Image: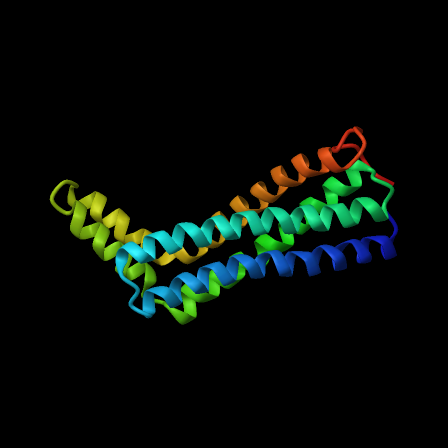
Length: 180
C-alpha cells in the first residue's frame, strides 16, 4: 500500500472510528446523566437495558454502513473491507478508551475509590489481610488497566464484527490475505 493510500485509509478509518466511539461515549454519558437526574432504580435498569440495545444495534448498523461504503469503493474485495473494519475498530476503541481513561482520571477520580471501598467492605470478613492489601494496591493501576481492557475488548469486538460483515458484503476471498 503506497503512502497516499495508507494516509487515506487511516483518515477514513479515523473519521468512522470517531463516530463509532462517539456512540459509545454518548451511551456512557447518558447513563451518568440518568443517575445524576435521580431516576428511580427500576426505571434506571429498564432504560439502561434499552440504551445498551440501542447502542449495540447502532454500532452494528454504523459498522455495516461504513463497510458497505468501503466495499462499494474498492470493488468488493473482502480482505480490503475486512482490514478497513479492523482499522475502524481500532480507531473507535482508541477514542472510547481514551475518553474513559480521561473520565476516571480527571472528571471522576474517586470512581475506583468508591468501588474498591465497597469491595473491601464486602470481603473484609472473608479474606486475609494480605489479600485485602493486594486488592488495595491494585487501585492505583485501575485506570490504566481499564484503558487497555476497553481497548482490547472494543478492538476484538469490532474485528469479529468486521469479519462477519465483510463476508456478507463481499466476494469470498481470504480476509487475512496480504493486500497490495
